[in-house]
Length: 73
Image (cartoon, rainbow, N blue to C red):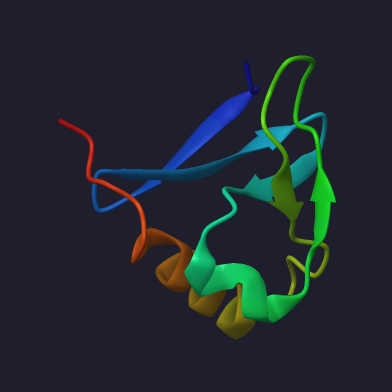
């Protein structure tokens, strides 16, 4: 499991895994052409966000990712 799991509006969208910021792969975030990475052994691939200093892009990616994910119950 990840070092930190990340939520936005009760939606699990990604996490911090070995100092990498990864978000789930969904249809709405494919347009950003991010690199796929495996967060940990036996996990599904996720997208790596490399430019974490670009706050506007980071916000946009997170919101786009959450649009396609279910809320936590």
